[in-house]
Image 1: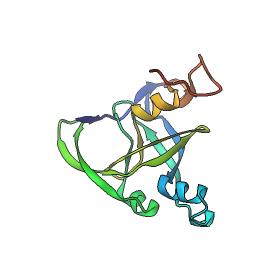
Image 2 (image 1 turned 180 degrees about the vertical axis):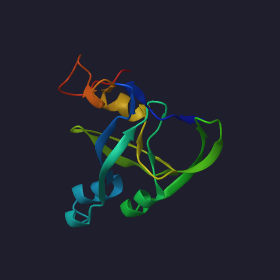
Image 3 (image 1 turned 30 degrees about the horizontal axis):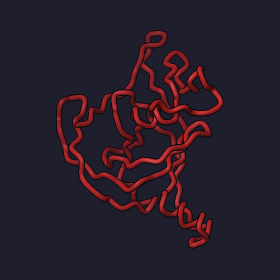
Image 4 (image 1 turned 90 degrees about the horizontal axis):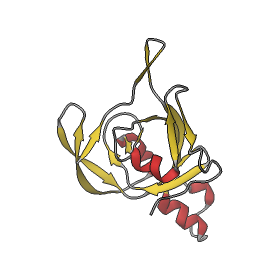
Length: 150
């Protein structure tokens, strides 16, 4: 089960959120372009501001983004929200997620009305949440490229 909690912190007495610019790409389109089977002009992408949600395990995208990217819902997943509710939500085929010049590929959960970046993307891209400055930063141990633990 997955939990969705919104990251908020107190800075100067005000509640804040960490939001980042994200580029989402249909990974099947990208593979077809790289093989010369699809015109690069037909590559479906979506750029938006996303909420970094350290309480969420997976990436979450709204149905509107699924449709814009032409993604197929390939399965269902039980999601558990911060308030304890559980709901069956769609699970997309793989998408490419690019943040701060780093990218990874994963399936996303389909629900809500905004893009949420969860723990799996942060871990894979080796990005840390800087709550004080309300941003993501590369892991200081290897700032130039992500390093994955095995």
